[in-house]
Length: 398
View 1: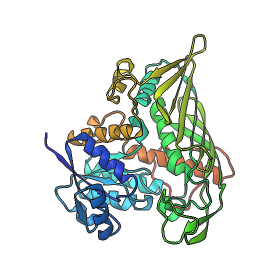
View 2 (view 1 turned 30 degrees about the horizontal axis):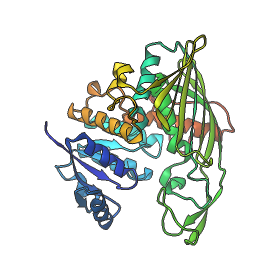
View 3 (view 1 turned 45 degrees about the vertical axis):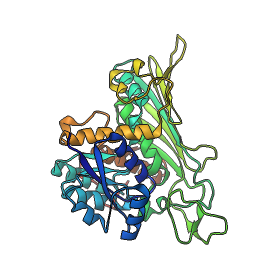
View 4 (view 1 turned 120 degrees about the vertical axis):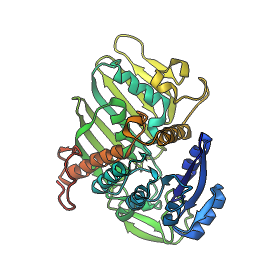
């Protein structure tokens, strides 16, 4: 099999996991990385043993050895770099969100279709075997008609007012913080697992920590610093806590709570789907067990055992029962699906069913946009745009 070459742009925190996942595939070469400066690229290339350090992303895109581009830059750079990569004829794997707005996301979808290449957005929780198991059970009617879809995505890394990241700056991270950063994952998971779309939302957003003590020289995500570090006060305008009511196109109702200032919750994603016949629930921090609830018989706990899984989920489990698989393994599964699609030419007909594309990224941005509009309108129901009409002009919300 011919080896593929990948280049990565934006070698920060998540880039390490992109490179690890690619290396686990065994048939992809890490050609090199581009960063915010040549010096930064050289430093990260050494640290990650990631091949060549490019002077700029333009130089990386011009290298014929790079067939696949991984875009792991901060949110505000996603459109510019993904668009350039598509125009250069490269397959693109982008971190979520796809872009900073629904308008930009729509532009990238259209550019990807025109380029005729594979286009992937990293909603990586789809890569868990038991997520695919839950999806298969619902698709085959084992839960009956879904009536309630609910859950949470809770974290505590922004609890301290001295914690600050570029994600809280609307110019860099976008208009939404908690919803855009982690609520987006939950919404994608809910739609993917149920096979249904969120059609309307009612959102209540709140900023628990309105003033933060930001470092004077750095705003890196997950950066640690001592109490004596130079600081500056920054007013926060985006939400760090949100609750949302949901309506789905199959008639189901739902609710979601999202927060990043909740002590004790590290990466607490939970999704539950209640049907007329049975229920399923899955937690990201306990990814090897799927709870199945019943009315007139005992509830069960399905362990991640390849021998017990639906055929569509079995390929996402690589170890025997009792050998835990978790976040990095799910990420590897998503990247494996991406490269399978790339090797098959990136046509719509050859896409692995669980793989999230730029269309899914655009769809997700429409859901988050509706939540922001709902809150801005005073907490009233807002319809989620179907994505078929031209995107709204800036300044025309509501």
